Length: 294
Image (cartoon, rainbow, N blue to C red; front, side):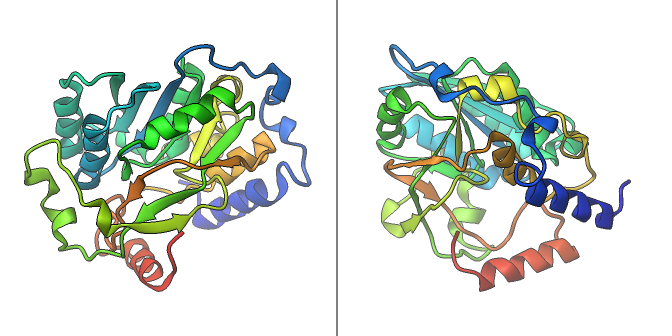
């Protein structure tokens, strides 16, 4: 196992230097030129790619939002990477996969836990394999509520750029671990609903993490940090996703903001993907409680 110091130095190299001081084409295929990007001639096809590890209690809201508010103006493929050992998430994915929803195709992909912990592995596979016009690399706790995806559809038909991102979301206050939205969601009849009045606007100023909507031509050519072994190496625990910054460095594009409706996210203290009571978990809880929303 590589040392934490080695990983830190490597992350600094790729996030600070590659694409800035060091040419990006040393590490990735050159992205398509703007005039090479195809545009949908009919109904656009969007693929949402999420990862879930011990987050079923929040992923259920994402699944439910697609059942409660299915898109009318685009075709959606919802791809979820998970591990079979996370039985709650596996059961949740199987439940919704059996539901027939207009314009929604469910894809549930079980991979080894160690591969799930390095999110770029699944994103790279999805990018190379996608048949969609656009790929939204998301987190499993985003909710696509009323008119969210349909308001995005118009931009997917007209924008000719490599990367888009939503210009804002709506979020809750930081919820404690015992809040009913966090603890009781899996025990409620499915699909679940949530009160949008409890969310307030939060601007998004750049493409990052869960807010990267990549043109399908770019995804198929570049993948997602596929030539960088550091970000394609399985791990024993969930790693901070420096590769999201590296991906944008390789793309050479920070993204174009687009307005969309009712993108919701529950903010909460306890992160399921980190081991309870670990130093990492404790430190991240402290940061979330002390920082402003982002």
